[in-house]
Amino acid sequence: MADANRQTSNAVLDGLISRSSTPPRLFDGVSPKRSDIDRMLEAAMSAPDHGMVRPWRFHIIEGDARYKLGEVFAQALLVRDPVAPTGAVDKERRRPLRAPTIIAVCAKVDPSRAPKVPVVEQIVATAAAMEHLVIAAQSMGYGAIVLTGRNAHDGVVRKAFDLVDQDELLGFVYLGCIDGPRPTKERPDANKYTSVWG
Ligand SMILES: Cc1cc2nc3c(=O)[nH]c(=O)nc-3n(C[C@H](O)[C@H](O)[C@H](O)COP(=O)(O)O)c2cc1C
Image 1 (cartoon, rainbow, N blue to C red):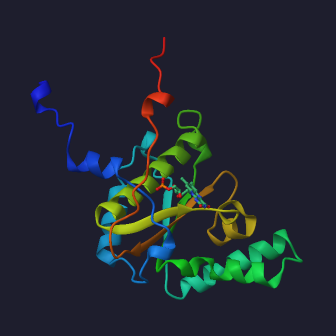
Image 2: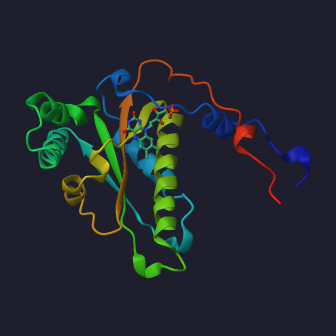
């Protein structure tokens, strides 16, 4: 391809370079439209996926389901710490209420595909899908942030999402409508993390 045809400035690059997470306190309480969520999920489907394993599973959590998730988080804390203070348990209960929509992104891995497609690569594919989803959400003007905390790796929470063995819950994508621009962030110099090898 001739250099003249290469666009080093375009909408996709601008979206990637300016990507930033939105803290849930900036959400206005309105869920993204279902048709827009479908577009985000469609974007997730083009993540690179060695062997086309399709390990990703997306669980949309809205409305009363957020209270159910809060109960799961509260139970998880009580199993970790049976004498957890009431305030801490309540905080877990309220955690999912910070966004109108949460998408739990899980990797249901197929260990029988290893060694050709190692489990770690299936998890990487799911992580890429999660990031496609986040970037798609932000490109449509929604706020999004990936959060995990202790919950994503807790046995009680894993069970609620039918995760076993080497499956992983990669993140809860908190989504919401925002009134105004996303936060802008200083980003590091890529050269600090780059070398020419060999
Ligand atoms: C897998 C994953 C889990 C994360 N979990 C948390 C978390 O539990 N709490 C938190 O404050 N940030 C968490 N983050 C970081 C935020 O999503 C976000 O990247 C961070 O606030 C920096 O903002 P930025 O994305 O605009 O650079 C997580 C990021 C990833 C990729």
